[in-house]
Length: 239
Image 1 (cartoon, helix red, strand yellow):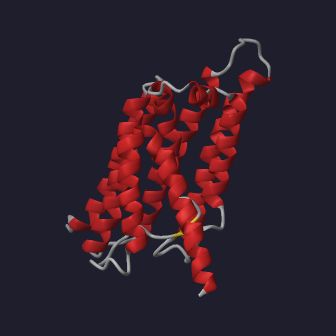
Image 2: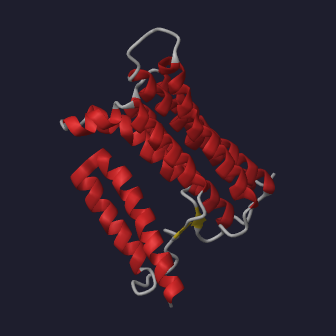
């Protein structure tokens, strides 16, 4: 029995397990624990592919398992988090649009599902991404309730407790997941600053944003990632 060929799939299933645990915490509005287990799942998601390539055991089964696990960890969990945030902004118990409104948070889950399915058949995304990867989108959404819990800014509180703004964030999230926007790869395959100065610069900015802004730094660094990618794409076209 070849143990090596099963290691990547076991890691993928552990990613799924982390996603399931995160769902339980999200249901109970324990957002910090949900964030922790999603981060652990995303960490494992990176290493299943790493070991599959290292052991030369990449398979169609592994590809499908990876997407199914990501659908929970990086698809269902952020949708539920947005549902919870929208529910917390409801001010009435009557069955009206304010009670139906929170379910629109699951548009993030639908957008994630479409992106994951499309990623499996899109041959253009082998070395870089087109559209925001689901793990990056998930970290942004899961950071929002933590930003809300840890801020003293009345402006941020007003923004993150407004259902319409939350809906706008939801729609923007689903759009960015599937937008035809090429995003540069963060993989650094060799020690060459000249070749990877964009990646190194972004990683340095990311560290500074996280140190100074903590949870708020997560959406800021994703916005920076998209902005730098757009600028990089324009520079490539002008050459």
